[in-house]
Image (cartoon, rainbow, N blue to C red; front, side, top):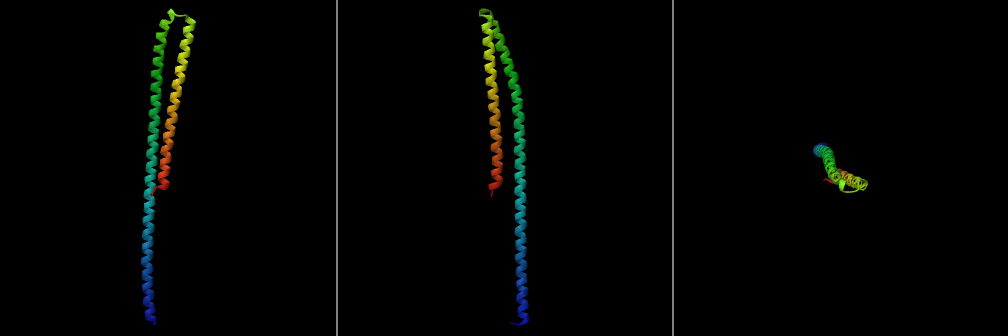
Length: 139
């Protein structure tokens, strides 16, 4: 093989290597862009989920306050009605009955509010798990 022939082959080889390197660089850049876009998408979803969670918390706290006020009003009305009937019954017996019923009703409402809080926490944990799942297993 002549020197010219080897130089031509070497030049072709170098040209092919340059093309190969350019293609590899393009693929690496495309992959980096895809990863950056996916990370931005995940960050946006996480931010949206956090905002939604905070809005729900605020809404729940407002509803709790409204419910407490409403319950207090209903308790006051119920107590007033029962006190009006008190004259027909033994005063001490009726007072104990009222207090017991109001305590029981208050306990039931507190249990219901705690159950709502637990449900909210479970929902928010499910949202966080879904975000984690999407980030780990999304193709």
